[in-house]
Picture 1 (cartoon, rainbow, N blue to C red):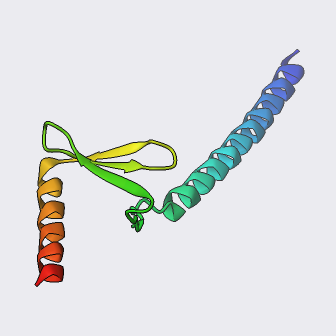
Picture 2: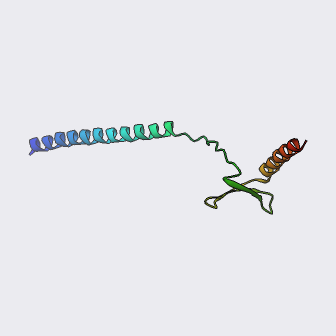
Picture 3: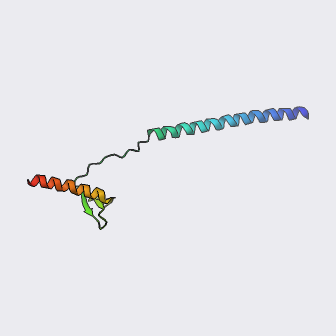
Length: 99
């Protein structure tokens, strides 16, 4: 009975080592896969040129600028300081075109 107990322990150790190696390989795969995704993820915002043919510009009662897409009706809200700067640029452009 002592011999079979030792064989059982050796078999258990080998099975544990195989299972441990498989777990490490799986963990290594997931770490490599997700680190590749994170490294190649570009989180910088992309600039999109919008013309007055595509969008309408409005200001709500909180002085926030609304840029409304004419095709879909979806809108983006910007803070009041953005609205003020857009208005100043637009006013300067209109002033230069009239003088």
